[in-house]
Amino acid sequence: MYILSFDIEDWFHIFHPAYENKPELWNKLNHRVESNTQWVLDFLSRHQLRATFFCLGWVAEKYPQLIKSIHEAGHEVAAHSYMHNKISNLNPETFFTDTKRVIDILENLTGSKITTYRAPGFSMNKNTLWAFEILHDLGIENDSSFKSGLFMGFSGRIPNEPFVLKGNGFELREFPTRTFNFLGNHLIYSGSGYFRVYPYSFIQKMFRASKYEMAYYHPRDFDNGIHNYLNNHAFVKLKYRIGTNSSRKKLDKLVREFDFVTMEKAVGQFDWENAVVFDLMNGENKKADV
Ligand SMILES: [Zn+2]
Image (cartoon, rainbow, N blue to C red; front, top):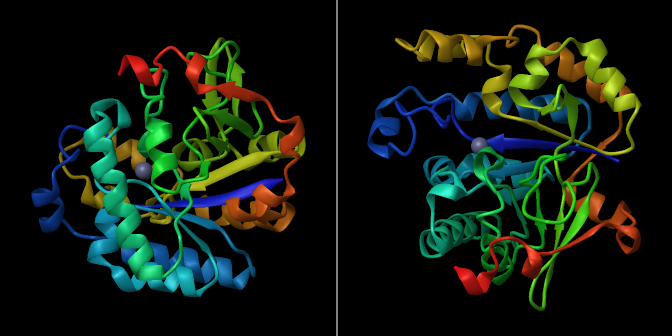
């Protein structure tokens, strides 16, 4: 089971102090998300593929037609927060407000229930386990906010395939992004900058060896002029430029070789009865302690 997903945000929605949480600045910058997402939509249409689109509420408000186009093309519209803040920078109250805001916007635009969520920058950690009960209360059933291999306050590492997060009277299905162990570091290979940096042969080898993958991209990953907008930040410029001249070809090779589905479809394909279960009540940050 290979899942294809896109995080619909602009080039300035990156974790850098010059851009983070600065909506007044964002308004003044050149927006690239609309044209880059259009490339993604055209690409998927050529390949007759459907994907899960984790949309930022801020983007959805600026470009409502873009969200409608994603929905009308048959893709799954999912939530990626409103403001793109790391969950670790929020508390239960501000997380609830941000998440409800994005869900309301996306449900109004699509006329469909939003049941899938991804935290900005995979920022769920052992201190933010309280967030899952809020996600459940807001109607979220499926989440993709973890990397495999890490310790998140449960007994055991995050598995490299889907698993269940069990809360007080509810369950959420979790779809982690796979990592490989390199000298004790758990590194991603299937998405974003990691995908841009590694040679295709390596990514192909990893995909061939596994039954589950969560591929994730941003519209900016396929824009080979993106570095022109990141003026005055030399390292950041390089970080987001690297591999953008070959990423379209790489993605083309990947979707030709492997069969991808949306998260929605993957829910029905996975054997949940035999899935690993993590009990949120036994995590390090129980709801009662918040
Ligand atoms: Zn993001």
